[in-house]
Length: 278
Length: 278
Image (cartoon, rainbow over all chains, first blue to last red):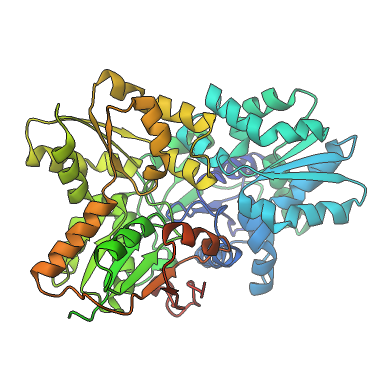
């Protein structure tokens, strides 16, 4: 089992930040990543669809026989995490929700915690339920920010428009006097500057990608299946290999030796390959 | 053949504006619509993926034996229109590009025409090629506006942020002295006010949904397969029937008697239904 790779899936490319952290914490491990770039985004879609896509992504990763699967997407973690655990009882799924919550609870002093994410993440109530069950005394203030993902994808992470949009979404948090804000979407850390400018330096921004990687390492070490030395291989698969993917990936995985292989995404089996070689 | 329905597909719900116009021009016709809400948007994806999705959407509509298929999505029209015609040689596809071009050429006086659409639409060069081949003397100025679709979906069609974003995208058109702007995306007519405020009243905004419907009518009348009187049935299928679909649809199809049926989208055949009853 020690030789098996770590599987990671995300709705697109944002999960590569998690891959990059796992690489730091588990440098000997092989990683297989699937990004569902053909059907991204998940955050504006229904629970049924997010579950179905997540099952298909898992089935794709299963072909690489991973020792565990990391759900790097907050929307899939919230809406499909427990569903996947029931559907694949022999498989371990680690997600990005629990590490975010643990970090937020460790950081907050006032117990007033803000939460931002996609509409699907926020409306699922999953974060809110888990936070309350871990600590009944915290106050949670949640806000969906649908324009943050397209803003980041347009590359407008620090102009005056992104500042104005952040002000509209985040203004209530100031009245609510939060001291901690959970960034419950892999895209949002790229807006940290703008968010910080609206909320001020006193509000701690929680980006859990590092904690997720730490959790992966702890899990593997605890079961004595952590591979300490290895070929440092990363295989990346995408359901849509659009032209600019090749130029974006180095920003996430600087200096990494990346192996990319061609694959047919199972959802498309028998009807032509959807994934192509990058 | 006269009794067969008209098939219409779109990447999401925007194509319902075309359905609404077809209803006006061909009130006796039955319409079957497929909106790919599970995989929307198309405009940021690659040609391969847009073609594959369009083939799957066509196969879905074929089960209703349509007399013709209208591609209501500009991105699919540009990137998959000719591909579909080659792939399904016995079938007629009408798209939204040609009517937009005809209307723009009829309207322009200076021959300086602006074009806005999704990145995939603009980068395909399809509109630009067709415009040049119809009239070699026109000057075309094209600009992708990736944030316009998410802005409309957030409902921010006339606030100060949408005005600022429109100004960033459209400012060059003022220097380029266009007198006509093609709105090459079904979402953009909802931003007409904001666009008009940036460009001024002298620039004519071309929204071709009415011309598409007129073209459908002319095609059917020419072949003597226009159904003048009928049950006025509209069947709507979506690959993701999210909760707010029911509340959005009346805005597109006011006062229409709509029949909605359950269906399994072919891409998901054998692996559970993706389309559900609305």
